[in-house]
Image 1 (cartoon, rainbow, N blue to C red):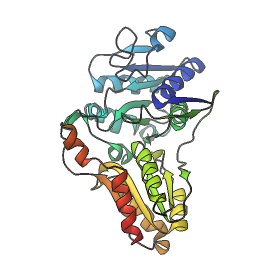
Image 2: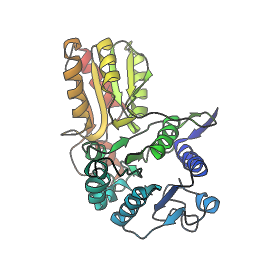
Image 3: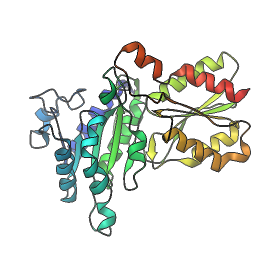
Image 4: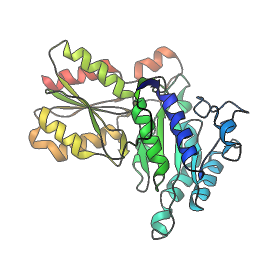
Length: 325
């Protein structure tokens, strides 16, 4: 198996699916090779390979990008709408929430919307309006599927599955995860939605994480091991559908839980998962569930201030120490 980055895994998934199915197309800002090949170079080389009618540069108009993709999906295509950053998805919320997510239901299942919205998520020293995490925004909406990979293997398998899915999928790619490396097998494979994975077995505490926080969870587990603490890591991989069974099963075994996310603490995914654990594994808990989340302030621009409010492995370690006391 080759060791590649998440960026390369996503590119390979797009190329393989475009080769497999002529109905797959991509549209977004500066995604062709005549422009930049995408802000993070995910689509580099695809327009030369498949032509500008399948890799379409659009105006700077997120509502138009997603609206075109919704219409194309209703008409039989399998569009992939690339938004330059998740922050700009706010301009397309009506198309995503009121159209893509609801058309199947409103038309009694007669019309499907096999659409993928790919977008970078999270911080990157780009200040308050360009460094946000909207995991919980989209996970709140019935009719959407929400994906947040943390490894190259999962990124490729989940994206290929998203493209083949008949429902609209929000595919969140954390900017700090693009450079993560890992082994990815050659050939066709899919990672199913709604199946979390135990990335590391442990006995003393369950750490639930996803996206960038998966790597932080592994750092925390390594540090805790030196203290004699065995941490189990559950990677959610998809936020909607959410695999509650794997989360609850792990907590039943370890009897303690820390949920590590990058959303704001109030009303976020960490709160949802903590509630899920309380509902499903309350009788097994030996300590209250602890949450690790972003400080509830707009993201500052300066590196030192940004570093002061983002959750890290050190915060996870401290939360684990608290539940073990």
